[in-house]
Image 1 (cartoon, rainbow, N blue to C red):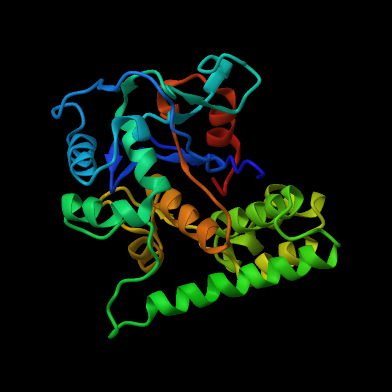
Image 2: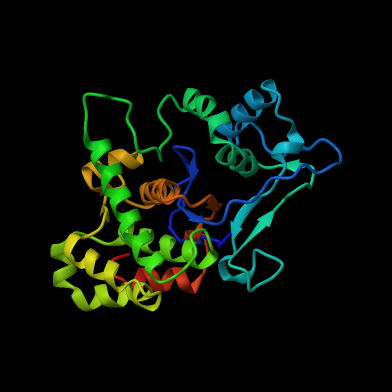
Length: 288
């Protein structure tokens, strides 16, 4: 499966189950390593949510070995993975030390099993779901329709290129297109900074998605206006049009999943790195 590595920046700590802002990587296929039972490497004080999830999962019959599958780490500065050329790497798999990230990662990979447990602990819906379970509202229905329309639009373009559905090239194009949908602002702002828009969406042209580049120029995207006052769910952020780092991560995760891709969160905290890629994004991109 094509690895989806999409950089969303943050460092706001565990919020609505996502830690900080996140990157995305391909979802790994869990395996069950043999060996000693992993020991928790953290206390409830250090990460209460992960500790509670661990307790309830083990009560439900999930073994520590099943959770000790590692977690994805963004390789900022090329210093956090053994191979400095990697963009991300899997850390801690089968090492008999159960990290909070691994418990959260397990729940992302087994969302149906974990959703009720997580929502009980958070006392609120999971932040990346695009339904509010309220039949008196229509916003969630409309946003899902819009996303489904964009997915079909992109799929049509990709299929006309003769690219096989589900292939790495197919997933790459779909992922890049949906990422641009999330990162692009309303049409008025695009028109005011059209050359910057063309520069930012150059990857679409390189992948043969010029039709979608034109679509975004006229229809705009789902970019949020920066607001850090209150942590929002994906739906809340989309409805108000406000949020930032963690909200963008939840929106992108939800949209990639709805598009049939397999995203997962990658544990990052770029604010405490000297990563040039991050600093360049801060300095030069008006759509950042």
